[in-house]
Length: 96
Image (cartoon, rainbow, N blue to C red; front, side):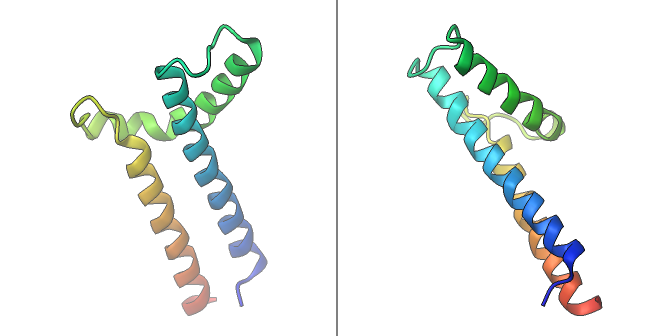
């Protein structure tokens, strides 16, 4: 059984994981002209997702090069979030 603080941290990490996934999908849709950012709703959603994810992705992009023109920084961020979730669970079970 996890304590409430650990549970809250896990929920926040899970929600942020989904934000990163949705942001990556949104960027693909814009890049392949499936959705158009001249639509005000699409632009607002894209800007919101960008503002949520860019502070975490920017440092990763500085250190991880693009591979074949593909930005893998969201994958690295998702792996980091997965590691943090596992770390929170491990600390909660072993030390709390």
